[in-house]
Image (cartoon, rainbow, N blue to C red; front, side, top):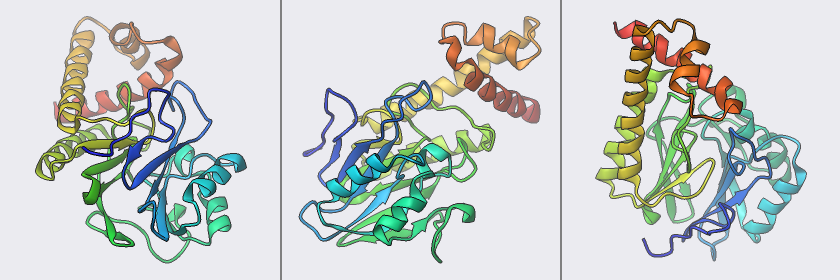
Length: 267
């Protein structure tokens, strides 16, 4: 796609003609380079929306977002989901901008409007279309920017590696969401996925095919581990995720619990 930016130095400044990532300085094994806060709006326009302001307590990051807005008025703050690394800074950013916070989960809203599957959010003469993608969390959403043929994926799809099923998520929902998202990006001929963590991805269909295949492969590996005597989530992690950095095993164990729930529920 013309105008797609994927800097070699990392996610900061990545994006499309009408979307730009501002990288929060909260790197970790779970957040990769940090949280991508997305500014959406025409660069020469007078208004924008901001997706996922990032973690709580980082005034410097919020000020950098304001600087990148270059005077554009923030009409809304949108949350892909309520996890703190995405939503923690929303209340403070609302104070700085006067913009409402819109989310699926009412606990994270500031203002009268929420977000739901099928909503259309105007951004000047642009629009964002909301797609419900529960699974990583119960309240996960993706946003389609038709003008740029791009989809903001939050933690449903990451820029590197694969996402975990959090304690408030569900694997059956996640598999359905991946299938739905895969069909959608093919139907709209999307050319970029703009994730909540990690770099921009320029092969949406290929990435989603890989995500779906990976999930099916993990389920098969867990089935085999159980057949070979592994019983607890930790025992399964030590077999199935042996090649993964042990620092990530707690997150892997969370995903294994979700996969066991799925397998036992579908048996």
